[in-house]
Image (cartoon, rainbow, N blue to C red; front, side):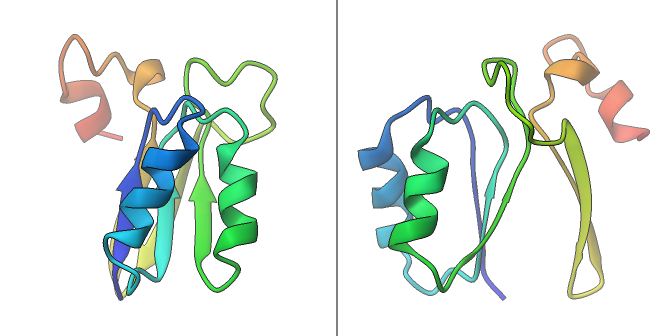
Length: 97
């Protein structure tokens, strides 16, 4: 299973799409926040891909979750934008989640 992780696309559909085009074998696309509508458009272009997304600090009014835990091939992933865990200050708050 191949997973592509992106974040902070801020409406830049072209770059987001290019990231997927660079490796079409990706099965799952994880967006870690700060998308501006391009996520829904990407789902239309790639209906065969699984998408997971969380809310970033610029996703005001979004109904996406702040974080999510998923398991892929017995590996647990904690998916978040990080702004609610003070990642700019230190990694300890997020490492101990």
